[in-house]
Image 1 (tube, rainbow, N blue to C red):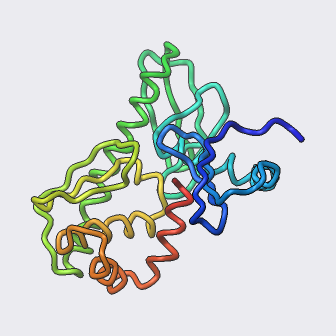
Image 2 (image 1 turned 45 degrees about the vertical axis):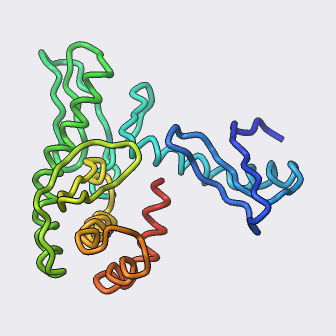
Image 3 (image 1 turned 120 degrees about the horizontal axis):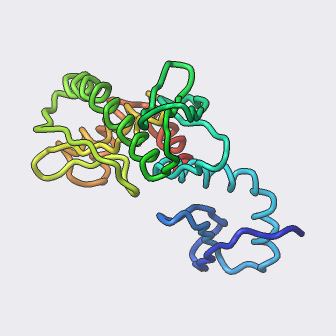
Amino acid sequence: MGLLPTYNHIINPKLKNIYLSFNARGELVIKSPKVPIERIEKLIISKSSWIEKAKQRLMQKKGRINFQEKQSIYYLGDPYMFVYNLHASKTTLVFDGSSFVLYHKVYDEAVFERKIDQFYLARAKEFLPSLVELWANKMRVNPSDIKFRKTKSQWGSCNSKNILSLNTMMMKLPQHLIEYIIVHELCHIVHKHHKKSFWEMVEKFMPNYKRVRMELKSYI
């Protein structure tokens, strides 16, 4: 067998199946009943492709980009080529609809990452308020304000004052997943919990929410 990725194994006798996920640090977590270690390792090997893709999506969500490798940047669910241009006097990120072009004179990954974060923030401010208004009108709820920030652990939140906080990394997701997050947080204006009544409201406005929610989980 090849080298296995490092992982945290949590044994829970109450479980009937083996579950793979990642924690906030990007580490593979395996939860299972008491089973032979050989079974765990066999599962890791069989799921190696999923594990690698899921970890990449996690890093994408957190905004972590390996600038040393050729890669794509995601916007509204689609990957776009990331291109360097070394002939410029200052660092500028341009999205032309088909690719992201980073114009720069000095190689500075911290600056590059800030430019990408600024792109997502600007697009979030342009794109998300109208979607929030659309769904708020449909649901007859009234958020008191919308705030935008890049976070590592949440796609969105709704506080006691009905202020929505939306993760700017949402702009990497397909629109139907963005809309699910918005509906989910708007439901928290009425229900400040995740009890049955909350999920019933979510289902009322998004009948396929279970499938969409599972798809969103694939982005960690």
